[in-house]
Image (cartoon, rainbow, N blue to C red; front, top):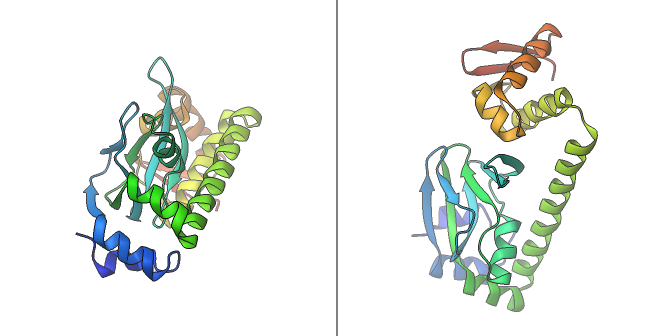
Amino acid sequence: MVSTEHLQTFSYLFDEDILKAIEKVAKVKTFKKNDIIIDIGQELQYIPLLIKGNIKVLREDENGHELLLYVLEAGDTCAMSLTCCMGKSASKIRAIADEAVEVIMIPINEMQKWFHSNDSWRNFILQSYQIRFDEMLETIDTLAFMKMDERLYKYLIDHVKLSGSTTLEMTHQHIAEDLNTSRVVVSRLLKQLEKEKKIELGRNKIIILDF
């Protein structure tokens, strides 16, 4: 059940009509870290509005290698899932809980109806498309123009901004999967960053020093 407290996350985005409509038709779901929220090939019945936590949105190649596209924060929705819903096609992305998350699940038929009848909802959807598009362009630029050591350091700094902490609890394998590279490469580059006094390595954690 969607409570008034849940809706406060979105009160600055939507008018009272949409907030009441969400309360009436949506439901709240929780996911643990690493739970799959949306999977590739899944027929979507709902779109997620993130209440708290972070969600990683990934693409997968034919060999099963994943690439991180962007990360959703509280107040966000996934533009890729919106596109699939509007086109009534299967999901082309995988959304995974980066930590414990709580989301409001909105039926897609309601989402489509509100898009044509409510300005605040339509503006939110269009802004979400623009934000995610800009983030995907940044991802493309990173892949095209940055060396792997630069990509790795940017990845770490982005996670500091997301978490609000300079201590990141993550494994080298976890980072390698997000950056679509090998654990050996990540370990070597992290050691180099440590020599440069930019980070300090611990057991399954990385402390960012130069931030």
